[in-house]
Image 1 (cartoon, one colour):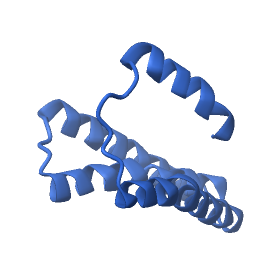
Image 2: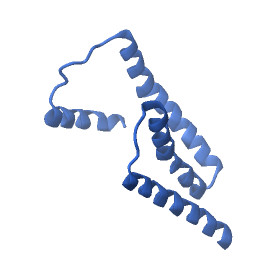
Image 3: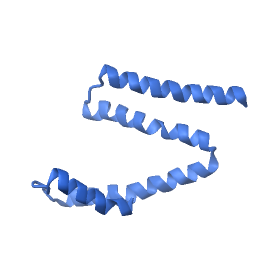
Length: 108
């Protein structure tokens, strides 16, 4: 992630331009420091430790839950609206994950 920061920053500046209105405050600086290195590294360490204790199949299915939690959170906290196409895609992904789990138990 650290190596991708500079190229992504340069691409963002090239295509989006330099940010014109950033209202820096102590809260914004604290959020950047927390969300950047602290929260990201803690989540990475937790995910790595969990991955060592469960099978790769189980871990990959758990990681499929991350977007679902994000979508639910955006609906609950941000008032986002889900379209039919988006819900259909979510149902297909969820169904595929459940089928993979069901077939793995059947073959075991």
